[in-house]
Amino acid sequence: MVDNEVMSCGYSFHAKRFVQDLHRLNTYLFRLQSEGSCTIYVDGEQLRIEAGDLVLLKPGSAYELKVDGMCEDQMQTDIVSGDYYLYGQGEWLDEWWARSPRPVKARIDVNEDLLHLWRQIISEKNGSLRENNELLNYLFRSLCLCLDKSLAENDSPDNHAFTASRMKRFIQRNVHRSFKVEDVAKYVELSVSRSSRIFKANYGKTIMQFALDLRLAATVDRMTYTTMTLEEIADSCGFGSYTFFHKAFKAKFGLSPAAFRNSRHPARPAFHRQNE
Image: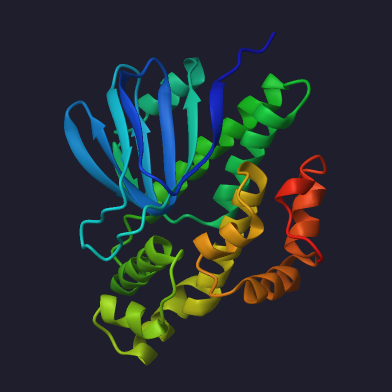
């Protein structure tokens, strides 16, 4: 019998004030802020967590979570917080943790490969009729190694890479609202043309293409893991209108939002927009 290293995992989204009361962890906690922001308290220390921040906590840590919509630079006032989380344990994880100092909070490059791996773990843990612990453990160990890689790449001394990372962080933090390229350029104190060149050179996409991909990814998560209506999802993910959301979603995935959601949850017709 293979021991289960993943105790629980999932995706959490909050659009209202939320508090997870102070408690002491009896497992390791991995938490990746995918959008919005929140505040955590770890062993009495307050930390502001924003999109792109990875939280790593060991057993015995005193932990509390608050979602209140405030932001250090006061640019975000809406209450929006989306995150992937995982509680784990086991000898392999003990050994992995001891390999190097683990920061409580670290900024990483939240790429689609990393999110896909995390979603696979969630699907295997929560969606399978019969849990395959061996497969689940291999996926989890792959995630840990990918996080190591992301943490190492984040230490790059390249000034352009750092500037691009700041722009990416701005987009992730504000992806649920409407903004222009000029807003991103102003944030890093560069011209529109220079900031656009730096961003595309580092990420292979324009600023607005990157923002659109993030918004569409967020809609998929909310269609899969929440009971929000499609109109609520479109609005909360920064689409100016449902029509634009419908067009952009169908162009990327080949299905309307309602058809896509129905393919994931055929037993939930009440959550679909009608007449698509």
